[in-house]
Length: 297
Image (cartoon, rainbow, N blue to C red; front, side, top):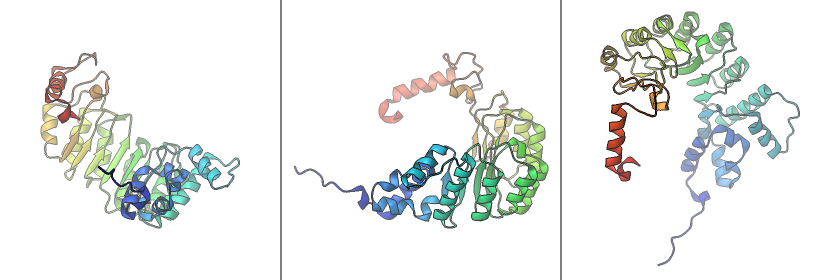
């Protein structure tokens, strides 16, 4: 029997290569690894469609330095902030106005966000986890992003004035993610009053009160997706579950599933020792074992 014909990776269709490149990740594309494979991959890595979503959360100055060294350039003592700006410039240029989402690293500042607003005014979503930005600077950026549909920001930017400005400037804004240590009823009220049309709300890994959860469910009438996974308080009651039944998705698994001392999201049973899971978890493990590897893979 003749062995199957071997085909080159470079023979893949351009559209498929672009889809692959869009999943490689911006740091790898910027460092020049995958694009150097062959001319077809090089062309795909520079297709604007590969840069619609730019994830720089894992970006480091080392990534930028490797790219500069590969191109024969010397960055000298350029700061990390300037290096990130340079790579944002490359990403914006390659996207050619088609950039839809950007996820920035934690050390990004208001200058990087303003750069994106000026170069990609049609941006639909950004993640900006920094805590060092003033409300005025942030609102100035928002004024330039009228096509914005969602954002992920630190709790320091969750106040009535900022979120109301978002609501007024961005008519299609429907998605919010908040990086917060604690969410009480007051913060929940601010979000509900300033962004009443939210359809998707994510506040993971937060110490959240039951009153805050109820406030979201009662006041955000158009809400479809609520993610409070990794919560650190026992706030999920039968009443909360009943209110959340109208949602398309309610993700509320506690840190029990992450191997920490919390409640089981399925039955609410409290357990101090993660090595001795509740009956609900044990039943699931037994059923998975009985099903066999073919169904659990």
